[in-house]
Image (cartoon, rainbow, N blue to C red; front, side, top):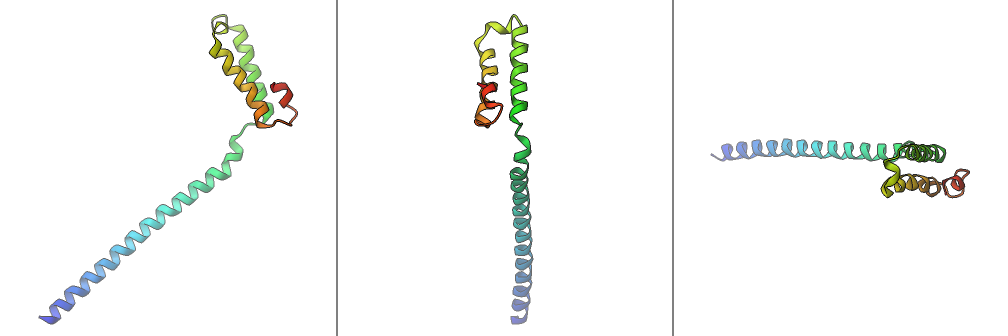
Length: 103
């Protein structure tokens, strides 16, 4: 009888050990994925920002398109969208060559 208890206890310990290893591997995998995602976000954030010159040309295009549309020209929110684009040029690089043009 004692042998049966010891054998059952041993099997349970082995199963618990396998379960713990599986949980550890799952946690390790999730942490690894999280680290990779964070590194990619930080690394590619620099590529996502547009250059001030590109922002200025986008704002200028917004302004020209607005001036040519007689319906949109009447509404303030359309003007504010273009103004915010010009302001973003100055905000991104206040001392740069496009900053004055953005104001």
